[in-house]
Image 1 (cartoon, one colour):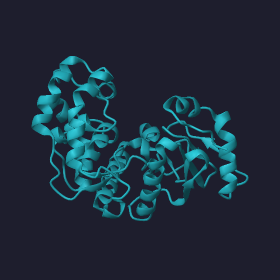
Image 2 (cartoon, one colour):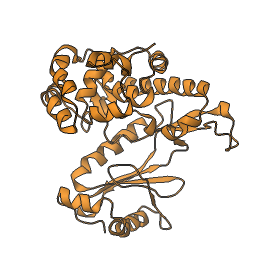
Image 3 (tube, one colour):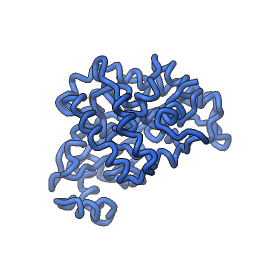
Amino acid sequence: MLPEVTSDEEWARVVRDEALLRPGLLDLCRRLGLPDAAPVRFADGSVPVYAVDDAHVLKLFPPASAADGVREARVLERLHGRLPVATPELLASGTCENGWRHVLMGRLPGESLALAWPRIPGPDQDRLVDAAGEVLAALHGLDAGPLADVLGPPDWTAFVAGQRAKAVRRQREKGLPEEWCAQIDAFLDRHVPSLGGQPALLHTEFMREHLLVEGDGDSGSGRDTASARLSGLFDFEPAMIGDPVYDFVAVGLFVTRADPRLMSRFAKAYGRAVEPCAAMAYTLLHVYSDLPWYLRELPPSDGVTCLASLAEEWFGAA
């Protein structure tokens, strides 16, 4: 039986306690028709996620995150077979004891693009960035209406205003130096985008870590380097409906990684470029925003001391 979790303190104790989770996990696998399962937990993730075998992945959601499980299941169901790249097939979802939820999905082939990237030859990297741009365009082109009952926010303008109100405090609490904090209000006053068109289905964390690749060019693998291709997109737990530009935060930081040439390729494949300052505004407003971490990941060049120039460096295209 999965353990009872009634507080954040209990969750902090339970989330990494495999000895506590495993009996309930194995019982759930049996009830899902996988009696011989030997689940192996993935290292990443805010909730427990397991490779059950070569064909299945099982994700567990504690009571406080049960709505996330509903959301992911619905998005997987909506997306299956509708993008240029595979997404996990929804196989089962439902409630467990003590308020937990589960999502059983098909396991996608391939390796994390983030891990494979250093081994991939430059021309193949370019082609993968092109493919990623096409995938995001296809995602944004889908009708998000059938998911409006489970995906938020219900009012994008109100969401942006709420994020705007706490933007400076959040970055200060994350440890952002005051010379950057002092710029945020004026920058957002000028550059917060308005939703000019139809709200789109957003991944919100469209990054190399959530893209899978096959044929990565590793000379020791015996694979044809020319076959490097995207094989999957996953992790739709934090999906939203809103301004498509919002997804370019993760694109600039974690796909093209401040490379203007790659951003240019991505934008061409996507079908349009985004204004760098608009992407930077959403970087400050994103639900997972952590500007000090981004500055460590992508240190600004000498002389880049204002948010506008940082926006150009991170999100500009060649």
